Length: 183
Image (tube, rainbow, N blue to C red):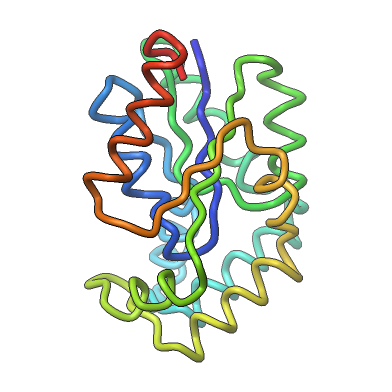
């Protein structure tokens, strides 16, 4: 079974792309669930500041491949029955860990959108909205601290997401169709 990892900057459309895979029979594993669970365990409010602090703490404890390591049991359990889509691959180290473990079964899809488009989306989302300053800060942190550029550069497929959800879905469906439904 395949493991498709979705990578992209905040607001690019990773979760929307993952939904298309999920609608095609993939089991979704959202890397960010680890952060949310840890925040709740600590009794903290879910906001950008606590999310960032929690992500950084987990990476200090487990290394930069933390989310690949912590989510591997979920991926392995899910892959027994269905192909898996990972919503939110972040670091170069996560990419290397997943590639080492899953080998050729790993397919990386980068969702790309301009900063202006992404920041507009982030400011208008219902859950965890970010203002322009917070979005810029998150961009910087993801590039400088999380080594996010590497997985984007190594993607097997690039999807430009500057338009509608329907256009995004069509591009993802083309990827699914190009591989016989097995990304």
